[in-house]
Image 1: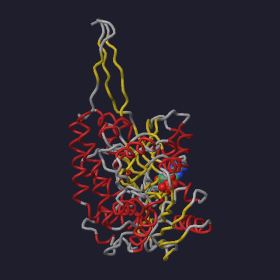
Image 2 (image 1 turned 180 degrees about the vertical axis):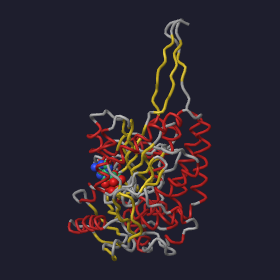
Image 3 (image 1 turned 135 degrees about the vertical axis):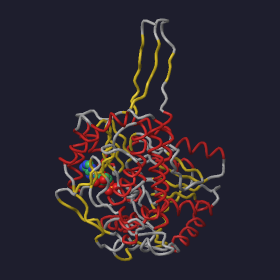
Image 4 (image 1 turned 45 degrees about the vertical axis):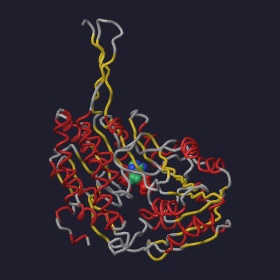
Length: 484
Ligand code: ADP
């Protein structure tokens, strides 16, 4: 399928530094998670290349910064249009390297491109402030300026959207960027970068350092230690987020971190059960359960527990699993063998502790795992504490509203949460009590480009998307003018 691109020149395997495609000193394999077959060998860059990319970005910065917001808007809008014009090809590349169903991949291209469109518009709205003077001889203003060279380290679960959500606001603000995409999905990143070049983004303003896992660690160290890099935006595991934070302490670097989640999904007695079942399926099984906002723990109130579980398990059994290029497939493979092992470990642990298997439970073959439901889940199970990141839904039973809130909040994470209720008083009480950055109320899918996406507690720092998404990349400067 990857050989069927309308525009084969979108399949890039070299890295992009200062407008040049470079082969690197060594290469690494990128495989199709559906078949295990090799798709491409990609440039494996290292610490020295990272230094060169940072220097190139810094050199390209003044000219980019000095463009007007409207000029940057026009270039970003070109990029948006090229991403959408090449939606099919980009989705093909994405399904091949990441595994998600082709329709879902096309959806991600549109979602990823929407950040470019949104921040293209925001580029025109970097406004300052005028403040009242504290004596009549002075005038006080605040201007906002681009922070400088930015680095972005991104994960494999959204190979385009996690890049554009960082890169588009940085570019719009007037900052150059060095991206280190996930080693499992670099091809989507490189294709998007090729389109960025065609859109007119100048050499050095956007650089992509592809690297295997060892080289990624080395490049991460260079980003953190660099005095030229002023901001690092990372999406990935909490564990790696902590490493980057610790490594960035000596250079006191500004960080944006989108880390793990452990999303609760609560269904109260007064909910619309059919709608809750639909929401739970969409939230849990999207991307084979591999998103940081996927429902990880489903809590259902006693009065509707049996009917919810019965309807939910019946729908889950009907989900078609397979190669993302096959018609009707809604769940592809997991990204790696280790991911399959983790799901199996959580399922086996839940069964050993008294869970009741209602659907799935096993590896199908290769990296495919059955969509799984277990009822009578309890707080001592691994799935209650850890993010499964796979197609396994444990369903817990509760009686009182407060009991569900306490269980939902009993985690170090605080990214997305969901609940279903039609009682307006309860909706306000529960929405305010959940210690999460995002709450879906009678909604299982909540992300879009013009809302602030992000978490509290150990789920991270900062928000992406929305008008607030630009703040990361702009520094405020206070001007106090005397002798008026
Ligand atoms: P996931 O669990 O989503 O694979 P990771 O946090 O392991 O998340 O990886 C997310 C991104 O972070 C990838 O691009 C990966 O290469 C990169 N990465 C992993 N470890 C490090 C590290 N020590 N320093 C810098 N980047 C890293």
